[in-house]
Amino acid sequence: MHPSSRPLRLLLLTGFGLAVALSLFFAVRLALGVFYWSDPAHRDQAVEGWMPLGYVARSWDVPRATMQEIAGIDQVPSGRRSLEMIARDEGVPLQTLILRIETGISRYRETAHD
Image 1 (cartoon, rainbow, N blue to C red):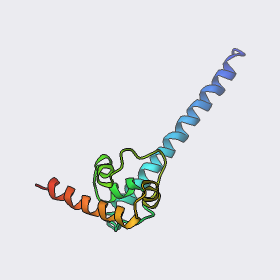
Image 2: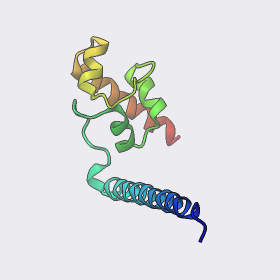
Image 3: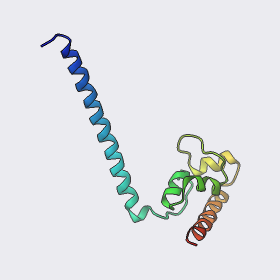
């Protein structure tokens, strides 16, 4: 066996192990998401201040961009900001933001089913 083949083999094995680990990580993450969102208890949940905007969009089956328009936000900064944080940053009472979102969801669903 050539002396340089051992480090190469070790490098290839490490790369393969890393690829397998990443694949497993994303497979588990996907499975957990599928199980979570397939539970009817997570659909059409009452909008609460702790929820991020993306969570509300997913629960109510509204596209994220539409949910941003409904909430009156130009762009959601990176990271998961709760509705409480968004209301505070926008200078709007939380209940006003929640009412705006609930009204917008109703309007979206009325037009989406027509």
